Length: 336
Length: 285
Image 1 (cartoon, each protein chain N blue to C red):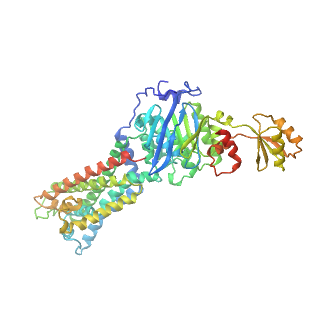
Image 2 (image 1 turned 60 degrees about the vertical axis):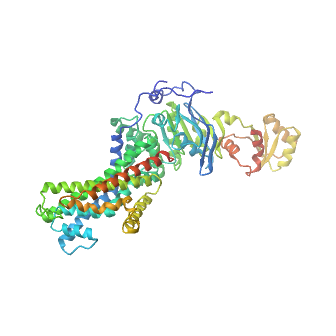
Image 3 (image 1 turned 90 degrees about the horizontal axis):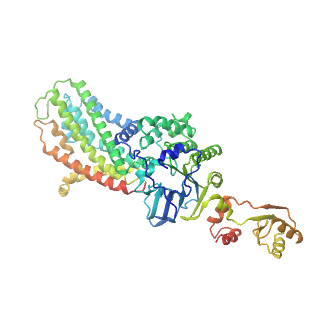
């Protein structure tokens, strides 16, 4: 890699040359706001070229972590590196190559969308004076806002505001784009649009960090996932690896769950009760063995299906509090 | 341990020229409907004074203002300076405070400051641009009021009767010079107010709080200035020398009050900007 621009503009379609390089990293990150610990011991690694989805319930420290990554907030403890520069000291060197949409779009209501972008573009070090109009129009077109660009921001819908925020992050070809809840307030079509843009950025070799509570979106667009809970990272890694880490299960729908449990335990198949019947663990047994055991036990079976290990399950497992439904506690033990 | 991408960043620019930021800031300030409304209202003040004087009737008010206003009737030189004196008492510091309130607090409230911080604009440069913006707004207000006052005065009285409070008559050029001195001095006083207002603005997210603080500061100062029991405090209060603006109209011009006022404003300017710098460089964005 020679220049930042080549990565962003010229590397279209190329796989990242050094997959293990990190675009951003935090070590032992901690932030205390007036005695409240917002984030603690966060060791986040964003591989270069990855699309990392940052998941976590509200108040889990996603935005605080992003703000520290961008140098907007000084950590109480710990280190932050963004594109190889220590933050917040290296902001001047790192941030021109980083586009960000943090805590919702922030624009002036009395200016039009285009004028707002012009104001933002004026501060972009990578844009020469003569490049600004073109950059603004391109960004507007990329988020599908060209037609409404002349209207005042005041009159924009929530979705249009969000798009304008995204346009601001994409004014310049970036090495890294950080999007905090980009799909907030968007309709399904807008959400698909965001997913498409993230996909394009990924194809261009741009590292993307996207925080979201919309799990399906993350599952659809991300290569990597980091799950935050109570201000700490409880899991991170490649999406596929994380999804496979859960033990596979078979969901049996039956009216007499106790009997089914008994039948399975006789065959030494681990199982537990679910609201609809039982869930059999098939790490050691196969699906036909489970069904055979149920038939031998004379259990009435309505339906047997393989458990879908979606991100939602993973997320629920990782962020579930102890007070939550007991049905998941067994899985928690497996994880622990 | 994985390697970090600490390669040499290209020799691309890391900071935008200050003039470009300043131009963008000015566009933002003077596109804001509120700015234009306030400037328009300020421009009305000399016009209203002119009309009131033309309609006749004896002006009421404090001894100093009354003197100025009486002199303004039938004197093209006095009207702009009388208007500036009236504005400096309260209205112009408040509008300057409004501008300073929008500079940081207002932008923070809209979440727009983040956009520039992430570009990135270094926080020291941000303060420079913001201070220049507020300073330009104050200057624009003063120039506008002076011009409208001058034109109104000329319409009322023509170029004749350019006499000072001391009774001497001035040439038109000398009169313009005096108006320029008054405008410059008032601008400096407003910059001092603006610097303190910027410091407050950097501490809050509520632009209104900045205006209220400046209003309270002026009112408290004015009250304290009338209490001889605390006269040891008077030299430290910015409005202490605001009455001296009438000195511009005397011939020869007594410099004491004006010089003192300029020095005091300079001190406020330095202190205000230092506090604003200390706050804006450490606060979370």
